[in-house]
Length: 308
Image (cartoon, rainbow, N blue to C red; front, side):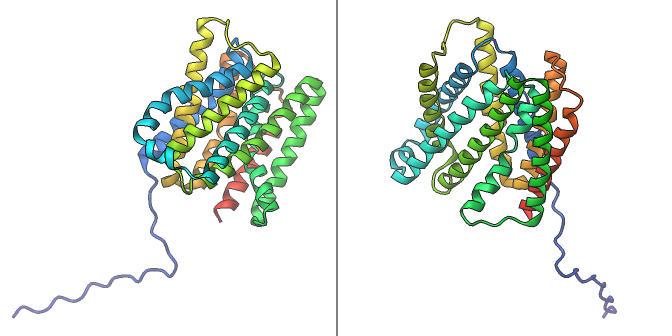
């Protein structure tokens, strides 16, 4: 009989070690497309020759027109069976999304794209504060990130106040829009525990469109009468920012995780500022750049602390 081969020594696994898993290449590409779509939002709104509230209204109406047939075809039974609580929460989320649009989109006409985008992306900070009100404690790194980001907010609003009171008002609207978006995200997360994304999105966007219609009528905002080019820009905004941007982010968060996804979305601020500078010639004040960096740094700390 042949001699037995000596057993090959296998190194014992290190205690607590987790084998590294490479991030899926396809999802990283989809995330890049998502960030590009979201980054186009602010410059497109600034460049479109139509009232900001009307743009927000038609953006949501078009989204419902695209999603509606698919949702009614594939999710009709689910839409009929949505519970009363989930339906009310979805409607409330849609109303908050309408408030978010009604505040943020006009802010882009009052302050720079860089300032408005940086301030509206403080949504994670408002989310942490709202969750704290309901007894959810955040890690120390999250609070440190919040302090850094809010320091950037104070610097940025101080810079814009030195420019004009109109820019300061735009900053305030963008901050409030970030707060409304935080409430929208928290309610949406609760609804999606029992309702599919497609069904929830249809109810939410439909509610947003109805609320924005009421706001436009109350404010006397015209809903038509501009050029064909403006309509094409609104349609492009709907496709890039809403369907590609937000929808793809929702898709990849399952595999990439909330930390990677939320941190990557922060690239919207420099992305939107760069597009606005090259396309619209809207360069932010040099003094505002350190403030934007502080806000982004704080949000990265919040994302890392949230992961822990």
